[in-house]
Image (tube, rainbow, N blue to C red; front, top):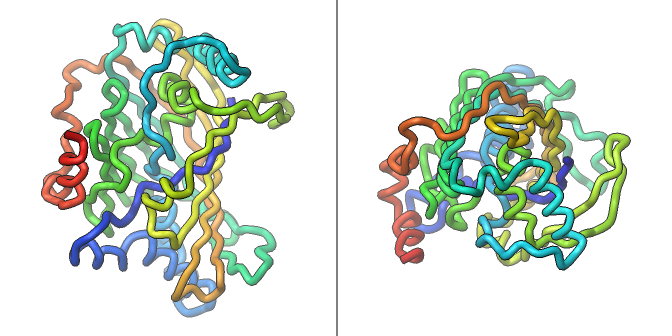
Amino acid sequence: MRSRVALEPLAEEPGGGEEEAARRRSGLHAALHRWARLLSGGAAGDDARPAADLRGLLSVLACPLSPVPLLPRLPRHVASSAQYIIEQFRATTGCGKLEDGAVKSMYASGRVRLSMLQEPGGGGGSGVIGSGGGRGHEGSFVLWQLAPSMWLLEMSVAGQSVAAGSDGRVAWRRTPWLGAHAARGGSRPLRRALQGLDPVTIASIFSTAEHAGEKEVDGEDCFVLRLDVGPSVLSSWSDGTAETTIASAVSDYRAVDGGVAVAHAGTSTAHLARFGVGVRAARVVARMEESWTIDDVAFNVPGLGPDAFIPPEEVRRSRSYGAAIGGGK
């Protein structure tokens, strides 16, 4: 199965407050300015570029969220081509085995390689940034999930560690350069769930999609499902100075624990466009790539409960977290 959909990265900046406003000068914005300086020769290129690249890669690819929340389980009936495709996907991957109550939690661990790639061309006055030869940074990750709105991801790449999680109401992220903060938009699935790791989440998110035809991908005929998310919703989750599109291809589906099919390998390519003041060109474009493999998958992890998904203290103290909790009551 191959999916292609625009996905928002987990927001680097929560909204409101002097402390939170100061953080806007950190994180992804700082990395993008750094790349722009490197592009114009304003920094020590060979020594500075790998660190800037790694920070940008982790900011964009490590733990972005799905563009839509989990949808309520709808009555299953085939009323359209898209719903027929989803039902076939459900049957093939064994979603029913995960939905009958027997599976409450999930664990996965794997390896990841992140690369900043050189974008050919550019055109239109765009600046193009990257590490020239696609220098890679290797690492590993672990993911825990509980029924399925609670999740926790930890990833370590080239000595840098990031984490992200959701307690079912609020999603958050922690990085060495920005600390821990709540994401805009409330709780949503992790993008990695859309990479084949969780077929139930995939079926839920695409249950309202439209069938947009067929397309040959890597020599195979594939169905194309289109899922539209309103621009007002996306803009409410970002500051409008960057735009990210991520395309993922998954493979190596294997039966796990009673026949549930889980993808054990895949790649994602992200195109990040940076707009606004302080960028040397009117539009700076970065192309990034992630490849990943799953080493271990297990269901019903002993002892895994809601307490494992409580956000860090600094997230719980933030006004954005309090507002999200209050809005959910």
